[in-house]
Length: 280
Length: 112
Image (cartoon, rainbow over all chains, first blue to last red; front, side, top):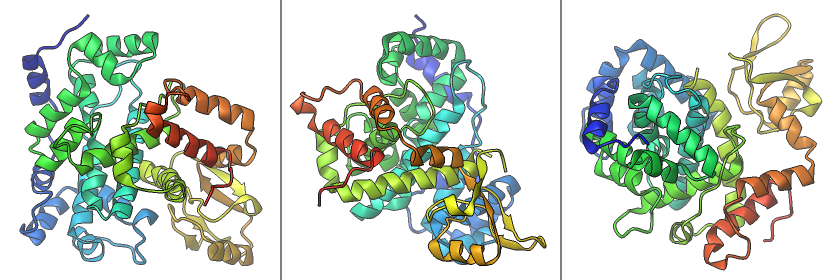
Protein backbone atom coordinates (compact mmCIF):
# COMPACT_ATOMS: atom_id res chain seq x y z
CA UNK A 1 0.00 0.00 0.00
CA UNK A 2 1.22 3.52 -0.81
CA UNK A 3 -0.13 5.69 1.99
CA UNK A 4 0.07 9.42 1.38
CA UNK A 5 0.59 11.83 4.26
CA UNK A 6 -1.05 15.27 4.39
CA UNK A 7 2.44 16.72 3.83
CA UNK A 8 2.90 14.69 0.64
CA UNK A 9 -0.52 15.83 -0.55
CA UNK A 10 0.36 19.46 0.14
CA UNK A 11 3.66 19.04 -1.73
CA UNK A 12 1.95 17.54 -4.77
CA UNK A 13 -0.49 20.46 -4.88
CA UNK A 14 2.44 22.90 -4.76
CA UNK A 15 4.16 21.08 -7.62
CA UNK A 16 1.16 21.26 -9.96
CA UNK A 17 1.40 23.36 -13.09
CA UNK A 18 -0.02 26.77 -12.29
CA UNK A 19 -3.00 28.31 -14.03
CA UNK A 20 -2.56 31.61 -15.85
CA UNK A 21 -2.61 34.40 -13.23
CA UNK A 22 -5.74 35.93 -14.72
CA UNK A 23 -7.62 32.62 -14.34
CA UNK A 24 -6.59 32.41 -10.68
CA UNK A 25 -7.99 35.89 -10.28
CA UNK A 26 -11.25 34.86 -11.95
CA UNK A 27 -11.63 31.74 -9.81
CA UNK A 28 -11.06 33.53 -6.53
CA UNK A 29 -13.54 36.26 -7.42
CA UNK A 30 -16.30 34.05 -8.83
CA UNK A 31 -18.99 35.51 -6.62
CA UNK A 32 -17.81 39.12 -6.64
CA UNK A 33 -19.69 41.56 -8.81
CA UNK A 34 -17.43 44.58 -8.34
CA UNK A 35 -14.38 43.68 -10.39
CA UNK A 36 -13.11 45.64 -13.35
CA UNK A 37 -14.31 43.70 -16.38
CA UNK A 38 -12.35 45.60 -19.03
CA UNK A 39 -9.04 45.03 -17.25
CA UNK A 40 -9.71 41.29 -16.96
CA UNK A 41 -10.80 41.03 -20.60
CA UNK A 42 -7.56 42.67 -21.63
CA UNK A 43 -5.45 40.38 -19.47
CA UNK A 44 -7.13 37.27 -20.89
CA UNK A 45 -6.61 38.55 -24.43
CA UNK A 46 -2.83 38.42 -23.95
CA UNK A 47 -3.09 34.62 -23.79
CA UNK A 48 -3.91 33.70 -27.39
CA UNK A 49 -4.48 29.98 -26.91
CA UNK A 50 -6.80 30.60 -23.98
CA UNK A 51 -8.68 33.30 -25.89
CA UNK A 52 -9.14 31.08 -28.96
CA UNK A 53 -10.51 28.17 -26.92
CA UNK A 54 -12.81 30.45 -24.94
CA UNK A 55 -14.24 32.00 -28.10
CA UNK A 56 -14.87 28.61 -29.72
CA UNK A 57 -16.79 27.62 -26.62
CA UNK A 58 -18.72 30.91 -26.59
CA UNK A 59 -19.67 30.36 -30.24
CA UNK A 60 -20.84 26.76 -29.66
CA UNK A 61 -24.56 26.18 -29.91
CA UNK A 62 -24.86 25.49 -26.17
CA UNK A 63 -24.82 29.22 -25.61
CA UNK A 64 -27.25 30.04 -28.42
CA UNK A 65 -25.55 33.17 -29.76
CA UNK A 66 -27.00 34.50 -33.02
CA UNK A 67 -23.74 36.28 -33.89
CA UNK A 68 -20.19 34.96 -33.76
CA UNK A 69 -18.04 36.70 -31.17
CA UNK A 70 -14.43 37.43 -32.09
CA UNK A 71 -13.04 38.99 -28.90
CA UNK A 72 -13.33 38.41 -25.16
CA UNK A 73 -14.93 41.84 -24.82
CA UNK A 74 -17.61 40.87 -27.37
CA UNK A 75 -18.22 37.59 -25.53
CA UNK A 76 -18.79 39.60 -22.34
CA UNK A 77 -21.18 41.94 -24.18
CA UNK A 78 -23.31 39.12 -25.60
CA UNK A 79 -23.03 36.38 -22.96
CA UNK A 80 -22.47 38.49 -19.86
CA UNK A 81 -19.46 38.61 -17.63
CA UNK A 82 -20.37 35.63 -15.44
CA UNK A 83 -20.77 33.22 -18.36
CA UNK A 84 -17.62 34.42 -20.10
CA UNK A 85 -15.62 34.05 -16.91
CA UNK A 86 -16.95 30.55 -16.61
CA UNK A 87 -15.86 29.69 -20.16
CA UNK A 88 -12.36 31.11 -19.62
CA UNK A 89 -12.00 28.96 -16.51
CA UNK A 90 -13.15 25.83 -18.35
CA UNK A 91 -10.77 26.51 -21.23
CA UNK A 92 -7.83 27.07 -18.84
CA UNK A 93 -8.39 24.17 -16.45
CA UNK A 94 -8.91 21.54 -19.15
CA UNK A 95 -5.53 22.41 -20.66
CA UNK A 96 -3.58 22.60 -17.43
CA UNK A 97 -2.86 18.99 -16.48
CA UNK A 98 -0.43 16.72 -18.35
CA UNK A 99 -1.97 13.59 -19.91
CA UNK A 100 -0.73 10.02 -19.87
CA UNK A 101 1.27 10.11 -16.61
CA UNK A 102 -0.43 7.12 -15.05
CA UNK A 103 -0.84 3.96 -17.17
CA UNK A 104 -4.42 2.77 -16.92
CA UNK A 105 -5.82 6.17 -15.99
CA UNK A 106 -8.11 7.25 -18.81
CA UNK A 107 -7.65 11.03 -19.09
CA UNK A 108 -10.20 11.26 -21.88
CA UNK A 109 -12.86 9.47 -19.83
CA UNK A 110 -12.05 11.72 -16.86
CA UNK A 111 -12.65 14.88 -18.86
CA UNK A 112 -15.75 13.54 -20.60
CA UNK A 113 -17.22 12.81 -17.17
CA UNK A 114 -16.21 16.26 -15.85
CA UNK A 115 -17.54 18.17 -18.88
CA UNK A 116 -20.80 16.21 -18.85
CA UNK A 117 -21.22 16.88 -15.11
CA UNK A 118 -20.58 20.58 -15.79
CA UNK A 119 -23.25 20.66 -18.52
CA UNK A 120 -25.70 18.66 -16.38
CA UNK A 121 -25.10 20.85 -13.29
CA UNK A 122 -25.71 23.95 -15.40
CA UNK A 123 -28.97 22.53 -16.80
CA UNK A 124 -30.12 21.58 -13.30
CA UNK A 125 -29.23 25.04 -11.99
CA UNK A 126 -31.28 26.68 -14.76
CA UNK A 127 -34.36 24.68 -13.73
CA UNK A 128 -33.78 25.50 -10.06
CA UNK A 129 -33.03 29.19 -10.64
CA UNK A 130 -29.56 28.76 -9.15
CA UNK A 131 -26.47 30.51 -10.54
CA UNK A 132 -25.77 28.50 -13.73
CA UNK A 133 -22.18 29.66 -14.12
CA UNK A 134 -21.15 28.68 -10.62
CA UNK A 135 -22.89 25.30 -11.12
CA UNK A 136 -21.05 24.71 -14.42
CA UNK A 137 -17.64 25.40 -12.88
CA UNK A 138 -18.38 23.30 -9.79
CA UNK A 139 -19.47 20.39 -12.03
CA UNK A 140 -16.32 20.72 -14.10
CA UNK A 141 -14.03 20.76 -11.05
CA UNK A 142 -15.83 18.37 -8.68
CA UNK A 143 -13.38 15.50 -9.26
CA UNK A 144 -10.28 17.63 -9.91
CA UNK A 145 -8.66 16.04 -6.86
CA UNK A 146 -8.29 12.84 -8.88
CA UNK A 147 -6.01 14.69 -11.28
CA UNK A 148 -4.02 16.07 -8.35
CA UNK A 149 -3.42 12.50 -7.16
CA UNK A 150 -2.71 11.13 -10.63
CA UNK A 151 -0.30 13.95 -11.49
CA UNK A 152 1.53 13.99 -8.16
CA UNK A 153 1.59 10.24 -7.46
CA UNK A 154 1.05 8.34 -10.70
CA UNK A 155 2.51 5.08 -9.42
CA UNK A 156 0.43 5.07 -6.24
CA UNK A 157 -2.66 5.93 -8.26
CA UNK A 158 -1.89 2.92 -10.46
CA UNK A 159 -2.38 0.82 -7.32
CA UNK A 160 -5.73 2.56 -6.75
CA UNK A 161 -6.82 1.59 -10.27
CA UNK A 162 -5.81 -2.03 -9.68
CA UNK A 163 -7.56 -2.16 -6.27
CA UNK A 164 -10.72 -0.66 -7.68
CA UNK A 165 -10.71 -3.11 -10.56
CA UNK A 166 -10.31 -6.09 -8.18
CA UNK A 167 -12.92 -4.95 -5.68
CA UNK A 168 -15.34 -3.33 -8.17
CA UNK A 169 -15.67 -0.44 -5.75
CA UNK A 170 -16.32 3.27 -6.01
CA UNK A 171 -13.28 5.52 -6.53
CA UNK A 172 -13.55 7.02 -3.08
CA UNK A 173 -13.28 3.62 -1.37
CA UNK A 174 -10.35 2.53 -3.54
CA UNK A 175 -8.44 5.76 -2.89
CA UNK A 176 -9.02 5.62 0.87
CA UNK A 177 -8.01 1.98 1.07
CA UNK A 178 -4.79 2.37 -0.91
CA UNK A 179 -3.69 5.95 -0.22
CA UNK A 180 -5.40 6.73 3.09
CA UNK A 181 -6.76 9.90 1.50
CA UNK A 182 -9.19 10.44 -1.36
CA UNK A 183 -9.86 12.77 -4.29
CA UNK A 184 -12.12 14.92 -2.10
CA UNK A 185 -9.18 15.67 0.25
CA UNK A 186 -6.97 16.39 -2.77
CA UNK A 187 -9.66 18.56 -4.40
CA UNK A 188 -10.09 20.62 -1.23
CA UNK A 189 -6.31 21.06 -0.96
CA UNK A 190 -6.19 22.28 -4.56
CA UNK A 191 -9.19 24.56 -4.00
CA UNK A 192 -7.27 26.21 -1.19
CA UNK A 193 -4.06 26.43 -3.20
CA UNK A 194 -5.86 27.91 -6.21
CA UNK A 195 -7.90 30.16 -3.94
CA UNK A 196 -11.35 28.99 -5.08
CA UNK A 197 -14.38 30.70 -3.57
CA UNK A 198 -15.93 29.20 -0.42
CA UNK A 199 -19.00 28.00 -2.35
CA UNK A 200 -16.81 26.14 -4.82
CA UNK A 201 -14.75 24.58 -2.03
CA UNK A 202 -17.93 23.41 -0.28
CA UNK A 203 -19.22 21.83 -3.48
CA UNK A 204 -15.96 19.92 -4.00
CA UNK A 205 -15.80 18.93 -0.33
CA UNK A 206 -19.39 17.64 -0.06
CA UNK A 207 -20.36 16.37 -3.52
CA UNK A 208 -20.25 12.82 -2.12
CA UNK A 209 -22.01 13.80 1.15
CA UNK A 210 -24.58 16.47 0.26
CA UNK A 211 -26.73 15.65 3.31
CA UNK A 212 -23.96 16.91 5.63
CA UNK A 213 -25.29 19.93 7.56
CA UNK A 214 -23.96 23.09 5.91
CA UNK A 215 -22.96 21.30 2.67
CA UNK A 216 -24.96 23.79 0.62
CA UNK A 217 -27.30 23.53 -2.36
CA UNK A 218 -24.47 23.52 -4.91
CA UNK A 219 -23.09 20.28 -3.46
CA UNK A 220 -26.57 18.72 -3.90
CA UNK A 221 -26.73 19.86 -7.54
CA UNK A 222 -23.27 18.44 -8.32
CA UNK A 223 -24.09 15.22 -6.44
CA UNK A 224 -27.20 14.58 -8.55
CA UNK A 225 -25.47 15.66 -11.79
CA UNK A 226 -22.59 13.29 -11.06
CA UNK A 227 -24.93 10.32 -10.60
CA UNK A 228 -26.96 11.23 -13.70
CA UNK A 229 -23.79 11.39 -15.81
CA UNK A 230 -22.56 8.01 -14.53
CA UNK A 231 -26.00 6.59 -15.36
CA UNK A 232 -25.89 8.10 -18.88
CA UNK A 233 -22.77 5.97 -19.47
CA UNK A 234 -20.92 8.60 -21.51
CA UNK A 235 -17.26 7.84 -20.84
CA UNK A 236 -16.92 4.57 -22.74
CA UNK A 237 -15.55 2.79 -19.63
CA UNK A 238 -16.77 -0.80 -19.38
CA UNK A 239 -16.71 -0.73 -15.56
CA UNK A 240 -18.74 2.48 -15.26
CA UNK A 241 -20.69 2.42 -11.97
CA UNK A 242 -23.61 4.54 -10.75
CA UNK A 243 -23.00 5.60 -7.13
CA UNK A 244 -25.79 5.60 -4.52
CA UNK A 245 -27.87 8.77 -4.73
CA UNK A 246 -28.60 10.81 -1.64
CA UNK A 247 -32.38 11.02 -1.19
CA UNK A 248 -31.89 14.41 0.49
CA UNK A 249 -30.15 15.79 -2.62
CA UNK A 250 -32.67 14.19 -5.00
CA UNK A 251 -35.56 15.65 -2.97
CA UNK A 252 -33.92 19.07 -3.02
CA UNK A 253 -34.07 19.09 -6.86
CA UNK A 254 -37.86 18.66 -6.77
CA UNK A 255 -38.06 17.77 -10.49
CA UNK A 256 -40.48 15.40 -12.21
CA UNK A 257 -39.68 12.68 -14.75
CA UNK A 258 -40.33 14.93 -17.75
CA UNK A 259 -37.73 17.36 -16.49
CA UNK A 260 -35.20 14.54 -16.05
CA UNK A 261 -35.85 13.29 -19.62
CA UNK A 262 -35.01 16.78 -20.93
CA UNK A 263 -31.99 16.95 -18.63
CA UNK A 264 -30.65 13.61 -19.95
CA UNK A 265 -31.06 14.75 -23.58
CA UNK A 266 -29.48 18.16 -22.99
CA UNK A 267 -26.51 16.67 -21.18
CA UNK A 268 -25.79 14.19 -23.98
CA UNK A 269 -26.03 16.84 -26.69
CA UNK A 270 -23.90 19.42 -24.90
CA UNK A 271 -21.20 16.92 -23.97
CA UNK A 272 -20.39 16.06 -27.60
CA UNK A 273 -20.04 19.65 -28.65
CA UNK A 274 -18.18 20.91 -25.59
CA UNK A 275 -15.77 18.00 -25.40
CA UNK A 276 -14.86 18.49 -29.09
CA UNK A 277 -13.75 22.02 -28.15
CA UNK A 278 -12.30 21.54 -24.68
CA UNK A 279 -10.40 18.33 -25.44
CA UNK A 280 -9.04 19.47 -28.83
CA UNK B 1 -11.68 18.30 -36.47
CA UNK B 2 -10.94 14.78 -35.36
CA UNK B 3 -12.68 11.59 -36.46
CA UNK B 4 -15.59 11.74 -34.03
CA UNK B 5 -18.10 12.57 -36.76
CA UNK B 6 -19.52 10.35 -39.41
CA UNK B 7 -20.93 11.24 -42.83
CA UNK B 8 -24.62 10.49 -42.49
CA UNK B 9 -27.33 10.56 -45.20
CA UNK B 10 -29.66 13.55 -44.83
CA UNK B 11 -32.66 11.24 -44.48
CA UNK B 12 -31.11 9.68 -41.35
CA UNK B 13 -30.36 13.03 -39.72
CA UNK B 14 -32.83 14.48 -37.23
CA UNK B 15 -33.24 17.75 -35.32
CA UNK B 16 -30.92 18.04 -32.32
CA UNK B 17 -27.96 16.31 -34.00
CA UNK B 18 -24.72 18.29 -34.09
CA UNK B 19 -22.51 19.08 -37.11
CA UNK B 20 -19.03 17.68 -36.51
CA UNK B 21 -17.43 19.82 -39.23
CA UNK B 22 -18.16 22.91 -41.27
CA UNK B 23 -20.72 22.20 -44.02
CA UNK B 24 -20.10 23.61 -47.53
CA UNK B 25 -22.05 23.49 -50.78
CA UNK B 26 -20.56 22.25 -54.06
CA UNK B 27 -18.89 25.62 -54.67
CA UNK B 28 -17.16 25.67 -51.29
CA UNK B 29 -19.47 28.25 -49.73
CA UNK B 30 -20.07 27.71 -46.04
CA UNK B 31 -23.67 26.68 -45.38
CA UNK B 32 -23.41 25.93 -41.66
CA UNK B 33 -20.63 26.19 -39.09
CA UNK B 34 -19.14 23.28 -37.18
CA UNK B 35 -20.94 22.67 -33.91
CA UNK B 36 -24.37 23.84 -35.08
CA UNK B 37 -27.29 21.93 -33.58
CA UNK B 38 -29.55 21.09 -36.52
CA UNK B 39 -33.20 22.12 -36.58
CA UNK B 40 -36.05 20.95 -38.82
CA UNK B 41 -35.88 24.25 -40.72
CA UNK B 42 -32.17 23.82 -41.41
CA UNK B 43 -32.67 20.24 -42.61
CA UNK B 44 -35.42 21.35 -45.03
CA UNK B 45 -33.16 24.11 -46.32
CA UNK B 46 -30.24 21.68 -46.79
CA UNK B 47 -32.49 19.38 -48.81
CA UNK B 48 -33.26 22.34 -51.09
CA UNK B 49 -29.52 22.97 -51.47
CA UNK B 50 -29.08 19.39 -52.66
CA UNK B 51 -27.01 18.32 -49.64
CA UNK B 52 -27.00 14.53 -49.37
CA UNK B 53 -24.47 13.77 -46.63
CA UNK B 54 -23.84 15.54 -43.35
CA UNK B 55 -20.85 15.23 -40.97
CA UNK B 56 -22.70 14.33 -37.78
CA UNK B 57 -20.94 14.38 -34.44
CA UNK B 58 -21.03 11.04 -32.61
CA UNK B 59 -23.05 9.51 -35.46
CA UNK B 60 -22.01 5.97 -34.63
CA UNK B 61 -23.69 6.40 -31.26
CA UNK B 62 -26.82 7.91 -32.81
CA UNK B 63 -27.14 5.05 -35.30
CA UNK B 64 -26.67 2.53 -32.54
CA UNK B 65 -29.47 4.25 -30.63
CA UNK B 66 -31.84 3.91 -33.59
CA UNK B 67 -31.41 0.14 -33.70
CA UNK B 68 -31.50 -0.54 -29.96
CA UNK B 69 -31.72 -4.06 -28.71
CA UNK B 70 -33.84 -3.77 -25.54
CA UNK B 71 -32.23 -6.83 -23.96
CA UNK B 72 -28.72 -5.45 -24.43
CA UNK B 73 -29.74 -2.01 -23.18
CA UNK B 74 -31.32 -3.54 -20.08
CA UNK B 75 -28.21 -5.63 -19.45
CA UNK B 76 -25.97 -2.59 -19.70
CA UNK B 77 -28.23 -0.60 -17.35
CA UNK B 78 -28.20 -3.48 -14.88
CA UNK B 79 -24.39 -3.45 -15.06
CA UNK B 80 -24.25 0.33 -14.45
CA UNK B 81 -26.60 0.03 -11.47
CA UNK B 82 -25.00 -3.19 -10.16
CA UNK B 83 -24.54 -1.79 -6.65
CA UNK B 84 -28.23 -0.86 -6.39
CA UNK B 85 -30.71 -3.43 -5.14
CA UNK B 86 -34.21 -2.99 -6.54
CA UNK B 87 -35.87 -4.14 -3.30
CA UNK B 88 -33.83 -1.78 -1.11
CA UNK B 89 -36.54 0.80 -0.50
CA UNK B 90 -34.21 2.88 1.67
CA UNK B 91 -32.27 3.62 -1.52
CA UNK B 92 -35.35 4.91 -3.35
CA UNK B 93 -33.57 7.89 -4.95
CA UNK B 94 -31.15 5.62 -6.84
CA UNK B 95 -34.15 3.44 -7.70
CA UNK B 96 -35.97 6.41 -9.24
CA UNK B 97 -32.93 7.46 -11.26
CA UNK B 98 -32.64 3.88 -12.47
CA UNK B 99 -36.31 3.80 -13.49
CA UNK B 100 -36.02 7.17 -15.30
CA UNK B 101 -32.88 6.04 -17.12
CA UNK B 102 -34.62 2.81 -18.20
CA UNK B 103 -37.54 4.88 -19.51
CA UNK B 104 -35.08 7.17 -21.33
CA UNK B 105 -32.95 4.46 -22.92
CA UNK B 106 -35.79 2.09 -23.75
CA UNK B 107 -37.97 4.96 -25.05
CA UNK B 108 -40.80 4.03 -22.72
CA UNK B 109 -43.79 6.33 -22.48
CA UNK B 110 -43.37 8.68 -19.55
CA UNK B 111 -46.30 8.79 -17.14
CA UNK B 112 -47.65 12.33 -17.03
